[in-house]
Image (cartoon, rainbow, N blue to C red; front, side, top):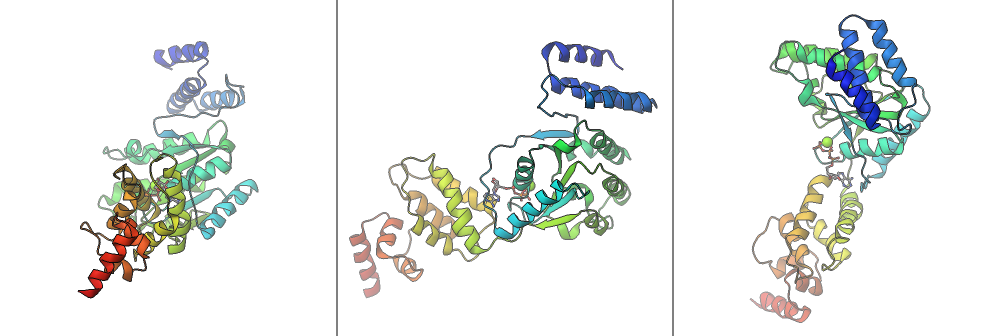
Length: 350
Ligand SMILES: Nc1ncnc2c1ncn2[C@@H]1O[C@H](COP(=O)(O)OP(=O)(O)OP(=O)(O)O)[C@@H](O)[C@H]1O
Ligand SMILES: [Mg+2]
C-alpha cells in the first residue's frame, strides 16, 4: 500500500467521493494480489462489495482500463428484426441462466455502440467500456497481462449484476490469429481473452462489437451466446423510420427551416444505395447546418445534391423523370411553381 493510496482513502472519506474510494480500494486490493497476499486482496474486495457506500444507489467502478459511458437519451430507430434480438437479450439476462455474452456485428454506423448503451439503459445497469488503447502495449507479453488484469477486475467487481462491460471494436485485439502480423503477441492476447471469456462472472453482461466479423478468430465467435447482425436495414427502414426520425430530431433546433416530409422521403428514395444510419445522420445534419437561413428549403436542395453527388444547378427534366411534381421541382430549384412549370415546358420544347 502506497502513501498516495492512504491519502486518497482519507480524501475520499472527507469528500464523500465514492468513485475515488472504490478506485483506491481496488488499487490496494490489486497491489496486495500482486504481492501474493491473495487472501487480504479478497478481504478488501469483499469489504467494499458489502459496505454501504457514501452514495448507495450509485454504482461506480473506475480503473485505468475502463471508461464509464454516459447513457444519454437515445434517438435510435432500429428495424424490427434487430429490435427483436435486443429484446431477446433483455429476456435472456433477466432469466439469469448464465447467458451474458453478446457480439454486435455490422458495418460502421449501423448503431452497434448506441445499441449497447440502449441495452445498459434498459437493464438499468452502468456501462463501462474497455479501453484498448490502454490495454495494447508494445512491450512483449504486456498486452496479454493487461487482459488478465482487466478480467480480474471484471470478476471482482462489487456489483456485477449492475454493469454492462463493452468491448467496443474488439477486432483491434481479436483478429484471426493466422492473419495478424505480430502472430505470437496478438495470438497470446486473443487466447487470453478466449480463456477469460469462458470463466467470466455470469452476472456481468458483456457486449463486444465489431465491423470485421468475418476476420474474427472462429474460436472467438463461438464464445458468444448470441451474435446480433446489424446489417439489416431495408431501404424503407432507412427512409421512413431512420431518415424521418433523424430529421425530426434535428428540426427541433432549426426553427427557421420548413418541413416537407413527403419531399424529404422522395429525395432519399432517389439514391439507389442509401448510406448506413451513421452517415445518413451526418448528411442530414450537414445539409441543415450549411443551409441558407433565409431559404427555408435550402437543406433539401443540399441533401439532394449530396445524395446524387451533384453540385451544379439541378436539371428540371431529370427531376421530373425521378418523379418530383412541378411544385417540388420549384422547391428544389428555389423558384415558384409557375416558374418551374415554364422552365420545364421550355426544356421539353428544346
Ligand atoms: N438505427 C439508428 N437510428 C438512428 N441513428 C442511428 C442508428 N444507427 C446509428 N445511428 C447514429 O449513427 C451514429 C453512429 O452509431 P454507432 O456509433 O452506434 O455505430 P456503430 O455501428 O457502432 O459504428 P462503428 O462500427 O463505426 O463503431 C450515432 O450518432 C448514432 O446515433
Ligand atoms: Mg461503434
